[in-house]
Amino acid sequence: MNRLSQSLALALALSGVPLSAAVASPAPGAAAAPVVVPSDQIWSGCEVGGHVGRDAQRDENRELFYGKPSEYAPAGPARARGLTLGALLGCAWQSGRRVLGYELDGAYTRLSSHAEFVQPLAAGQTLHDAYDVRTPFETSVRARAGVAMGRSLSFATAGLAIAKLNYTYFQNDLDALLPYELVARKRLGVVVGAGLDRAVSDRWRLKAEYRFTDFGTVTNLPTIYSPGFTQPHRTSEQLLRFALSYKFGDQ
Image 1: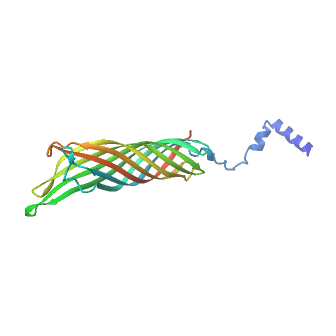
Image 2: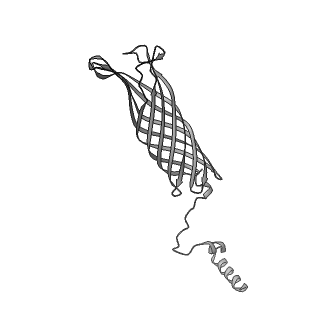
Image 3: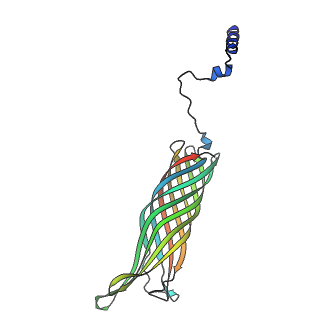
């Protein structure tokens, strides 16, 4: 056996082929071994994707008349539910099981809600005081922190959200409910949430997430039809969404 090894080494030396290459080289026609991302780095990198969700918005209006509660304030909040559709971009860094990162997203919402006060009057007439809230678009920027469990990642998220809210106020005129003023506001809110990511491959990921956003209170001051009235609004949202994303970089 020793003579056979020496003869093989001498033959390879004369042919100019290194011994290590002869041992390591695959056989002709053999498939190359696939590149496998280490399990402790599968969540490192950046991603881009799309998401769809179900959003529920609650807007509470406490109408005031010269600083005192108005008798015409709506009896309950304006509520809206609808689908959201948007895109996301984010990056993450993994160290062991700990994963830290950030995410930016935008969504087209078309949320629309309505609330009103109705009071019967004499001669069969009614008094209406109402408003609508429409939310066409929202965006957020958030930090994320999670714990990896192989190809699954549970995470918490928190950050800021921005939305455009359009308020339309109505008054009755000869029993017809007519709009009299539109107020458009950009609202900044605080968003928190949690969710679960699943890496279905080294590049593709599925995500399920719940988020709560509080836009705080803003006071609108209609001036055209009803001076003396102020309209404080407190707005919040709950969102359940699902996303599909593609990982395009490693960190």
